Length: 330
Image (cartoon, rainbow, N blue to C red; front, side, top):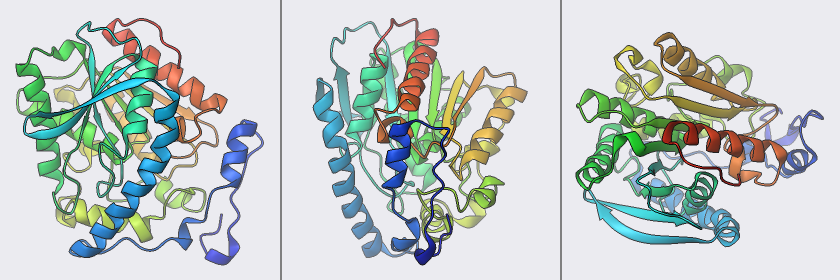
């Protein structure tokens, strides 16, 4: 792909499934989209959030129709939380906390509900999806404080950390990892496992694949989107703080067993690899699960392709291995 609007040509490898190839053929050039606003443009960000809500709800709708589930709204730790229970759910004490993606600046628990329902269906877990405050309304420290506050309240209500998974995708994967670091540092403890899907782990755009895959990733362009989202999320001088970019964390002090999933078309790939190496060097059980030719968040964006089914199966099996839960259909 050349990011110039007039020369869009996305490579579609023959090494991936027919379903994935068809999906890639329908993707639009990210260079044609508008730039994100500057960090201090409140009105501009409000427009971005409104468009994202509409987009997220439209994409969630077929997933919500596909899987029977029950959703109730709760206030936990002062935060709005959607409590999602999949078909056949029985209370065995296990649960997941979900932090949705959206470049730290958009979507909500409601507009990302489809993804939370897919995770609940895949794992059989009750899922608490946190409607945390996005940037620039909140900065990185407040966002992770909100997540940790929900976890603290769940623990006060009887939830065991040994039966809790923290799951996040995209920027929510970065927020999940940052929140786990903060939980550890504040003495809350560690969950049983972490699942990070296409996580944004370094908002500074320092990784090698930010350059080498720049013209291969059909999801976004850092210079049009990521750089502005990163500045809305954290001041440039603070963007390497582990609570903003968790790949810079000290994992020798502890971190839960972690599954990192992603695709080989993602500019964020360097973050996945660097996080894996940091966790592995610290002796943390970690699995880096990468997929040929796959895009950002492919597990539910290309739901019916074999690659997504396999990724969800591995996600289910990973969670089950640390929670002792039974088999589910991925």
